[in-house]
Every structure is written in C-alpha cells, then in structure tokens.
Image (cartoon, rainbow, N blue to C red):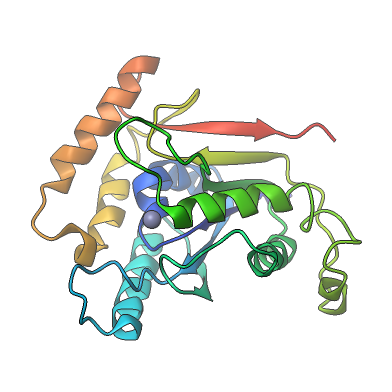
Length: 231
Ligand SMILES: [Zn+2]
C-alpha cells in the first residue's frame, strides 16, 4: 500500500527549517511526500521596493529545489499573499481541497501556538495555516456536508489520515533521529539562498538540532507534537 504524507506550510523554507530531515527519512522509508505551500513568501525581503511577484517566483524556485534535495517532487503553491493569511472559510476550503486531493495518511503542518517559546512571536501566517490545517482534519477534509462543492470536483472526504505532526521552534515530545539525513536537510535549507544571506546557517542549525537531540539521547533531532486520531 502506498503511504502518503502531506506537508502544509505557510512560506517557502518553513518545512525545511522545521522538518526536512524527517521528510528525507520518510522518503527513505518509502513514503510518498507532497508539499502544499500557502504563499510564495513574497514579502520575505527587507527591501520595501522589491517586486513581490518577482520575489515570490524566486522563492518558489528555491522551494522546488529544496524539495528535490529530500526527494519531494510534488509541490503545490496556493495563491495567498505573504503576511496576509488568516484562518478563514476560503483558507479552510483550499486546504480541505488539497487534503482530499492528496489523501494523506500522515499530515505535517505548523504549530498554531502564538507563543511556542518565550523568545519570539510565531508568525501570523504560521498560526493561521497551522490552525486551518489542523481544523480540516476534523471538519472540511473529513466531513461530506462541509464544502459540498468539493464533491462536484470529485473530491470526497478523506478519513484515513492517522496522524498530524506539528513542527515549530520549541522542543516537542516526539523526536526523530535525523543523523542520517542532516546533510540533506542542510542542503535543502541552503537552497533558500534569498533567506540566508551570509549567515553561518550550518553552525546555527547543527547547534539547534544537537541541542534538541541531547534531550532525547540522539546526536541530531527534529521534534514534533503528534496527534494520533481516534475515530
Ligand atoms: Zn514561515
């Protein structure tokens, strides 16, 4: 049986910072992993005069390259504007459509927590996307009477998603040993050149992943909160 995983995230690079080592492992284990990115990260530049469409196209290309590094070739971009994503009926419908289309056994998305640590505020797009993605697993993704218009698109509800994995900055209870895939994760992150500049991202990420691993007795780890559905 094919095992499918779907990652839903807000901006190009979110999945690579949060979970690319784990995605690479899943691919190695035979999972068919697909990505849905809600924006193109059009506002990710410091320059207020940057052409947003042009910048979004650059970041889309970076995300497609990063996906390829970890073995993901199916990448869909939805047309939301960066920093203008709200948990809305339109967002839920769009994510329910992707959920029903990809029929994942495992969903990966962003923690909707506004304050996952005491060091910064979780980006509002991350919160909105995480909230809506979680919610459709109980509503529009799985329930025929919600968004009946999706039935006209030949997209019946999908009820075989067993788990949702939440990625985010804090150390969370479920650890994945990414020692074997950390080099691919770092390659994937380096694909987002527009976001990295001349920062020493390798050292920064290795330190962060080693610190997370130490908690679990692993060399390098990504950590998640995992919801296992009881239906
Ligand atoms: Zn982001």
